[in-house]
Image 1 (cartoon, rainbow, N blue to C red):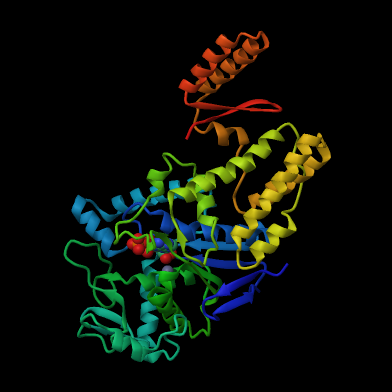
Image 2 (image 1 turned 180 degrees about the horizontal axis):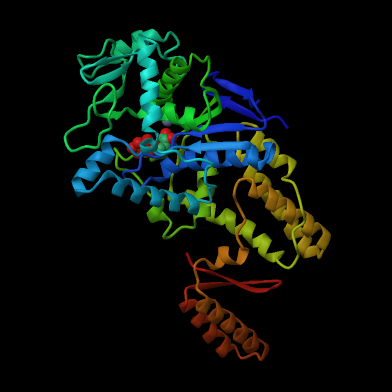
Length: 462
Ligand SMILES: Nc1ncnc2c1ncn2[C@@H]1O[C@H](COP(=O)(O)OP(=O)(O)OP(=O)(O)O)[C@@H](O)[C@H]1O
Ligand SMILES: [Zn+2]
């Protein structure tokens, strides 16, 4: 099945053909670690995790190299460190650890590589030197700037031209810039801020050059896929592309540019500057990570996605239905299986995750029918297919009981099982008073009992 991906540069869906199927390369711009990331920031993390899983499925697990960087040099990090009176590493370590925890709770695989800007100062300075040497950049007043007029393709990715950028430059342009669109590769640090030595004086790199240098070091001069949120297309990716191509004299930085749409709240982009953020760190206290992941994948990745309480409720219900079918089929082993053709076709069409998940319900209905009919062969086959299909998107890999029982501890589980057994005994003895009293006891534990043909099951209340 041919994978088609929408390429921002070509402005259309294109067949995905890696330069080397034995080493498929993908780079996604990662977090600036100065604060807890919000669920909008996790949209690209989850979306590109699905692409990573799909590529691994198609090309082989060892054939895909996925790098997601960590921006650990940044003005906002400096400001936070100064405010707390600590070294920047205290801040970046703290928020990177939280990011890893949240990413794991959202069931994302760790990327193959996680380069950090602070560990790539040598390559960053080297790349700036190459740009200065070949006339693509100039030094001025302790800064080094990229000379946008020296690169005729500047603006190609985002569809802007330099004249519009002059007209659009409302902010005061720094006097050392030759053109308002020229951007910083290196700048002096402020007092008490971390700095690194360079041929242009002590200072620190700009954000864009960090990614260009890390792509080069970790993946190579030309990569297959470059991803991030749509807000990064300009200026960040436009600038990365300009720097990398000029440094290497290469015609292309990435063969496919992928951008996810925004996660919105009431029609506005979720963003730290607007203050309308929900952070997984908090949300995970009340909502399973799998349900948050489901919500993030419930819309097509290029469309805006509105975050509402209903979206989370619907996501939990969808997973209840699927895990419910798996629990009813618990005693029958799943067969070995490939993902279903429908799910593969949906994902291969520019990662159509809403269509892919709708395919899960056909499989869970087939399981339910097979359980009712007592058809073990059909249970085995459909269960295997559902687990393989959903696994490709990172879903349904937990024990169905643990989905329903949530974070109930072993003591509580034993107590509930004991009460359920006593309730059956009371009912069998037609002692309705005792059965009602037991039911009230179960209720007081925060547990909901669901009676079904195969006996009673239970779950924690929301
Ligand atoms: N509301 C959103 N919806 C989808 N993706 C987003 C959203 N906000 C940020 N992103 C993406 O999150 C990733 C990490 O971005 P980064 O850590 O630089 O945060 P940011 O863009 O500064 O966030 P904010 O705008 O809230 O300050 C980028 O790929 C960015 O495009
Ligand atoms: Zn980047």
